[in-house]
Length: 105
Image (cartoon, rainbow, N blue to C red):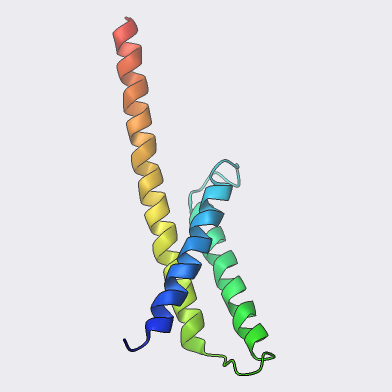
């Protein structure tokens, strides 16, 4: 399968970004939700860039710009998926809370 390494990069860094999203989901990092999107993607992308830089010192490894693009793309997809699922879950929790409030009246 051609370029399978790019898919693997995307999956691995998508998982990393999901874990970062999960870890900051309980913190209060700002009133705007853009921080909950930009921060995990930026951290993952920076880590991907440093990983590529590190590979330049490792024998038999190559530095590829497209690997970093795949890392960042995987992180972006994972972060937006996390945000969509979190928003959906919060909506269900609010709905259940409203049902319980109405039921007590």
